[in-house]
Length: 259
Length: 325
Ligand SMILES: Cc1cc2nc3c(=O)[nH]c(=O)nc-3n(C[C@H](O)[C@H](O)[C@H](O)COP(=O)(O)OP(=O)(O)OC[C@H]3O[C@@H](n4cnc5c(N)ncnc54)[C@H](O)[C@@H]3O)c2cc1C
Ligand SMILES: Nc1ncnc2c1ncn2[C@@H]1O[C@H](COP(=O)(O)O)[C@@H](O)[C@H]1O
Image (spheres, each protein chain N blue to C red):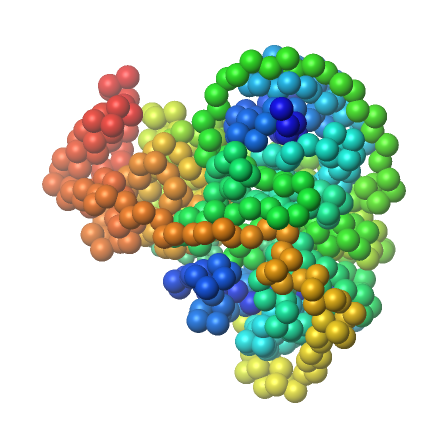
């Protein structure tokens, strides 16, 4: 069972995130970059499937050179090797273009299963599995809170409002995972040391046979025209509860004509 | 006038009991689409789906209703709906496509973009006549204006960001023949399971949301949150810490990795206000917080905050609200 896990490096959602005013793209160079948290669940799931079925886990990342940190983290959790697509021409790509690059990179690999996070926390699109499934003609099994791989089939419980759908498809397939699916392991000291020696193949657009003019900001299918910080809210009121907290609260709601 | 395709999203509760009622998000999408042209509703579902929808779609300005009914579209995940929409985009050359934002809606938008060689924008909160859309980025910290630059613009509209406004429409029905490719019939949906039935309003649609956090301290104690919600006719939400601690089911989580809500009133009880929680509620019109820690970051957001123990403040408030009814 060969598994590819798509891993993205993103600005830490807990730190201040910004767009770069020079070209309105996510300011990655100055950000506190981390592995997309959702992708850790995909890696954990890949390792679990490998433990049951054997095979190899390959990390695939499209992103700038700094993304090596995210790749090392993934390798230290236990993935076997990695492919890192990095090319200055990719800067500013939209999701449609990025999916073309990931699809081409997947074309250089052999896999039974592609796993990815349900959402990258920077743009919160939740579309990559759909885009890749469409491009590659692969079954899309997205939004999983449970995955079973058996007899050439992948089955998931797709998380929905108030429940789940049972969804299945033959392998090879692409599966995305929510944070409800497992508890990602922490890299062990041994894992961290071993990760330093694991192979990371770096590919450029030329290696993938992609014309640089078809990706990047200039030909992106959508663009940010302008942006601004959200206007600050007016100063709110904060009152201590001196036995009258509920009364004050209900008084406020009444003044707002809510009750 | 230019035609704009609007995908109809159905109310799941009504669908489960056999009827079809459009979700409020559909009426919002029909309203938003009018900025760009004349909306045509697209109904994709099992045979009989469109029957009950006609009046609501006419009331909210649908000039046409394209009806694509087949058992197969429900039997497979996402791909059939994208295929039907792509066929309509080819035949009708609309000015744009507007889809209610949901996990499925976003995936349909993505697949449709690849099929039609177009760009797409997800979770937009406004669409302007020139096609520019507004999006909220980075946990609500940044407001972005964006445009699709290639193909037929595809938008997914975030729930509760546009107020549905009626406008007369002829809602003239046109049947769409559904012939799915093999590629659209690989991912089978074998069962749809509802675990939490709730008589409360749907979280993303509710005009009031009452959410509890770790401070609520136990699953049993969430009854305090539910009672306050019921006194206000509100939906119940939860922080991730409350969900991870097993106090409340995951489908009620509000935040970056949960639901995004934008109600008239959001009441955060025993929630500290971490950035990932804010990501899901920051655009609420009015925010009220109850927290015993005067330094809790949620107070930076709150229009009105009570510093106190939720175990005394919240039940007393519930009682007073109920008494006013
Ligand atoms: C990638 C990522 C994604 C995440 N996604 C989400 C998400 O979608 N949604 C989300 O909510 N979080 C999310 N988080 C987690 C987030 O960072 C916080 O850990 C979480 O929101 C904290 O929940 P909380 O406020 O309930 O708990 P805490 O931060 O522990 O706060 C509890 C609060 O309750 C107050 N309190 C305690 N007892 C009482 C009492 N008796 N009366 C009154 N007040 C009391 C305390 O003063 C405290 O402020 C995410 C984190 C990461 C890294
Ligand atoms: N540039 C990228 N490189 C590798 N994987 C990615 C990239 N962008 C998105 N992904 C994967 O796709 C998932 C969903 O991302 P998104 O659709 O952008 O929210 C992420 O959790 C990643 O697993």
